[in-house]
Length: 271
Length: 285
Ligand SMILES: Nc1ncnc2c1ncn2[C@@H]1O[C@H](COP(=O)(O)OP(=O)(O)OP(=O)(O)O)[C@@H](O)[C@H]1O
Ligand SMILES: [Mg+2]
Image (cartoon, rainbow over all chains, first blue to last red; front, side):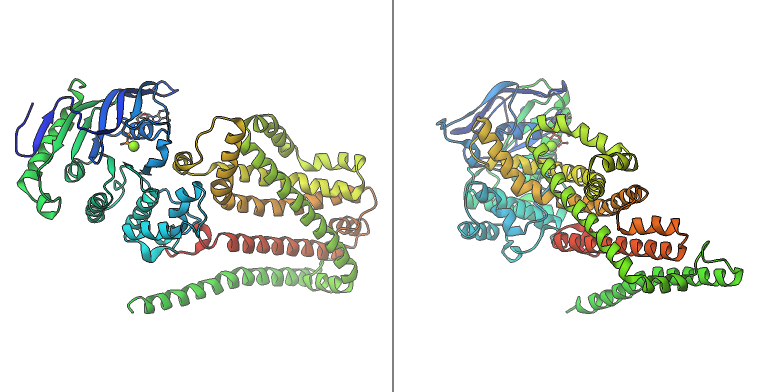
C-alpha cells in the first residue's frame, strides 16, 4: 500500500506534534441506535491543515461537532493540549456547509454575532467586524442583507464570522460543497492565504478528493458507517499551492492515490 | 451603466402589473354589481327579497349615523379581541419555548379551545359574562390560536446550526437551571424573536380575519337575546324587521371592514419584513 512518490507518504498511526487537540478512541452512537463514529483516534497538530475525507454519511460532521464540543462522544474522549479549564469553545471558529447567516441581520451584524455573545456592543466590536470583513474581502458589503449576496459571498461572510474571535482552531464542514467550481477554486485560494496570514489550525471536512489534496497538509480518509479513519496521507514539499500545483503531475498523482484510498476505504481495516 | 435601462424597463413593467392587479378585480366587481342591478331591474325582484345595489347604497347613506356607530362597536371588539389574542398568544408561545413542561401541560388545552366551534361557545359565554365582555371573549378565543400556533412554529424555525453557534460562543456552559434559562432567553431575543417574525405575521393576518368573525358570531348570538349594537346585531335586527336593504348595507360595511383590516395587516407585515424576508422583499427572481 505504501506509495513513495515525492510528496506522498502514507503513514500508519501518525501523530505530528505539538498536538492542539486529540481524539482518543472517540465513538458516537446516536439515541436512535445509529453508530456514526467508531473508534476514531487522531491528533490535530497546531498549525496544520487537516482534511477529513469520506463518503456521505460517514460521520464527518459528527466528528467536527464532537471536536467543537457541540455533542458529547459516547465513547472515548477529546483532550486539549493546554488543558487548563479555560473554555476551549472560545478558541473555535465553525463554518457550516450552508452559510447559516441570520437573514434578518446585515452582513456586519452577522459577523458581530460571536462578539455580541461575548458581551461586546456593536460599537465596541466595530473594528473587529471591519477587520474580519476585510480579511474575506467583503468590506463593501457590510450593510447588505444576506439575500442580496451570492452563494460565494455568503460563504465569505460565514468565514468572516468564524474568524471574528480569532480562533486557534477553525472547523469547516464542507463549506464550499454547494458552490460552483470557479467560486470554489477562488475560495480555496483565499482560504490558503487566510490561513497563512492568521496561522490558525484548520480541520476541513470535504468529500472532494481534489479539494482535500489542494488544501491539506494531511488527509484523514474515513470509511462509510460506522465512520473511522482508515488511512492518513501527508502532503508536503509541494511548494506553493496555486494554479501551478493544481495543474502539476504531482497533484494529479496525489489525487489518484487518495481517490484509490477512498474507493478502497470500505474494504480496509480501520487503523 | 448597463443595468440602468433594463431595471427601468422592469420597474415600469412591474408598475403596469400592479395597476392590472388592482384594476382587474375591481372591474370584475363592478361588472358583477352592474349585472346584479340589471337583474333586479329587469326581473322586478322586490327589495325585501333582493335589493338592488343602488338601493343598498342609498340605504347606507340614509342610515349612515346608525350604521357608523355600529361599525365602530364591531371594529372596537375586533381590534381589542385581536390585541388580547396577540398578547396572550405571544406570551404563551414564549413561555412554551422556554419551558417544555409548560408546553406539554397547556398546549393540548389550547387545541381543545381551538377545535371547539366558537358558535357553540358563544351562547354559553353570553350566559356567564356581561354581553360586551362575552362578545370580546369570542373574538379573542378564535383569534388566539392562530397567533399562538404560528408564533410557536416561528420560534422553533431557527436554523439548528445557528443555535449551535449560540452554544459555541454563548456564555460559559454553566450547569445551573437559572443560567440555562438565561441563555435560552438570550437565544430567544437574538435568534428566535426575529426568526419568528414571518410566521407571527402570517398568524396575525389569519387572526385578524378570525377576530372579526368571532365578533360577528357573538354579536349574532347575543342579538337574538336582545341588547347589543354592533353591525352583526344590526343585520339580525334588519332581518326581523324585513329591512333587507339595511341588512345588505350592514353586510357590505362588514366586508369593507374585513378588507381594510386585511390591507392594514398586509402593510404592517410588509413594513416589518421588507428589508430581509423573501415574501416581502420583492426581489426579482
Ligand atoms: N442527531 C442525529 N441523530 C441520529 N442520527 C444522526 C444524527 N446526526 C447524524 N446522524 C447519523 O449519523 C451518520 C453520520 O452523520 P454525519 O452528518 O456526521 O455524516 P457526514 O459524514 O457529515 O455526511 P455528509 O457528507 O452527507 O454531510 C448518518 O448516518 C446520520 O444519519
Ligand atoms: Mg456532513
